[in-house]
Image 1 (cartoon, rainbow, N blue to C red):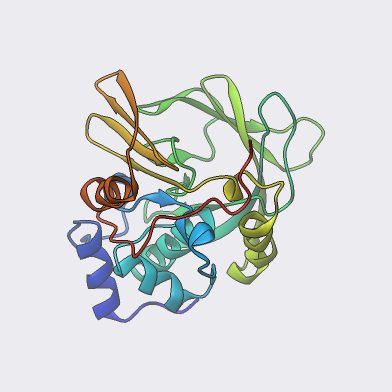
Image 2 (cartoon, one colour):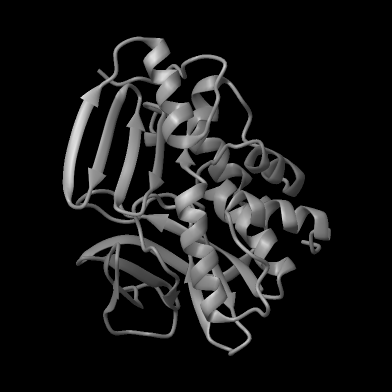
Length: 265
């Protein structure tokens, strides 16, 4: 991927409310990571609006600059463009997400980033996994890594040479492969997740954003707010209220309410 033009970098930084970093430092990376999570929602709305998922740089940026978010392929794919243009060394990594109580899923299930800062240390950067770490995780650290999102640990995966398991609060989240990939390598995974009845992403539209005091999520018509540890849940009444919730809480102005592609009873 080529570096972005300065105008596109500036537009991206405005989108996440960030100043241009003086250097490609770990401190600047932490700030960009947190700002991204608090301004760009994790969302699967395109799947339920009949909109294509296009994994090309221009399409990723146009969607983000238009006030939208996306899921892992889009969010981490776009963030990689920004970070490379700011002087970071970035590699795209494929991961397989653990099913609840089961093993890792399909290849190219998830896209995460390996980012090397000017200090030389490599970090796991992931702004596309929903409720995950608020800050980058050190890839070479094998002990516990406390984070506002939980206690994380990165370690060798059993029986998988060179792969790493990313664990949150004792629960495996995904198995990360160390080999760098290209954005085009993830097209099949994105297609499967946006079309298959077996994919959780096609069951209902989800939009979620980290806040300063918790998280806010709209899953189909259920609005869930976590604020200072207290969780409230409310079913929205009617299309107008759903569309208003997207505008007010996520800054997303939709022409119609997303309809689940493959709803489950």
